[in-house]
Image (cartoon, rainbow, N blue to C red; front, side, top):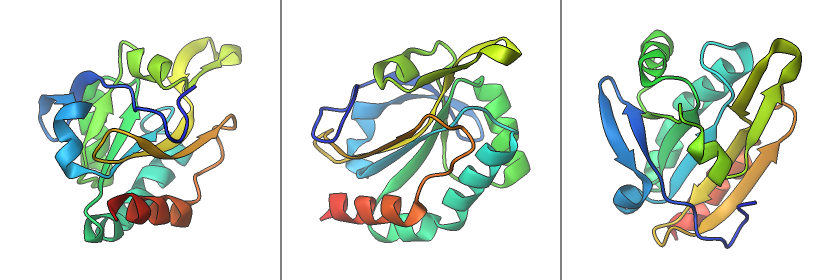
Length: 159
């Protein structure tokens, strides 16, 4: 389990940013602190509310030099459509091979729906040394993060 003080696992995955480009975590440490917001699935009610909240609070993150990225197991094409439909300006990382959710130990199943290996709702803040400075993971997909705590953690990591 990735915890505060651990080295954040590095990864390379498609980034939905209006186009599809390659994103490698370690290549973006100059944008740190990085807020990695894992979410179960695009176009679902709680995930939409969560990512729209990050969008509405984006200026607070930018003010401290932090960069927000969403991460789900959805395809980059679905994530680009989701970004467009919801007016999201930050990038969404596609973990369609499910390696990132495994590395960060944030995998959950919706077995009753026959859907396996989605991201738990989780937030990690990673500093410029690739150290995790904040971790929040929920086993309940209906619970959103404490946005004030995430903003405070990003500000602390920027200092």
